[in-house]
Image (cartoon, rainbow, N blue to C red; front, side, top):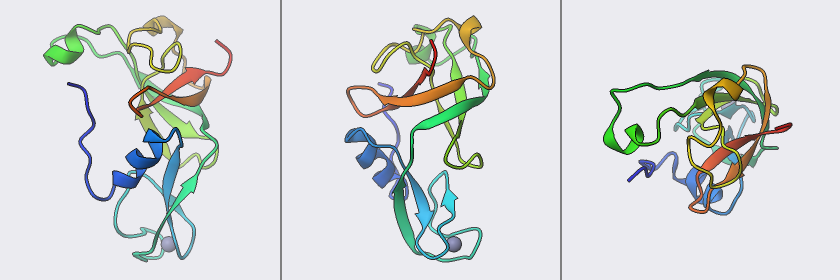
Length: 138
Ligand code: ZN
């Protein structure tokens, strides 16, 4: 099964995602966004935490197309893409995910040759609350 491993710091991210909402951890004191989630603000060292809704728009900052040998659950889906998305809200925030044809589509629903660095994308959510990305202009 390809389920995320959820730790206490990241649990709110997944709770919001299950509701179809993309939120990023922010410092409750200085407001700096941070990802991945962690207990302390690297900017002001505050332990205050807030979860801010973000636009869900971004650009492909980088990507890979994994090739075998892969774990069995992934091997049957290859070739597929793994993209790093730079959020429009704050380019220092980058999320890892998959570019898919539509919400809930398979990892291999976009051919690897269609993935481009810099392409504008927006977040969608699979039926089980996994953030995925689709092209703004398919
Ligand atoms: Zn701070």
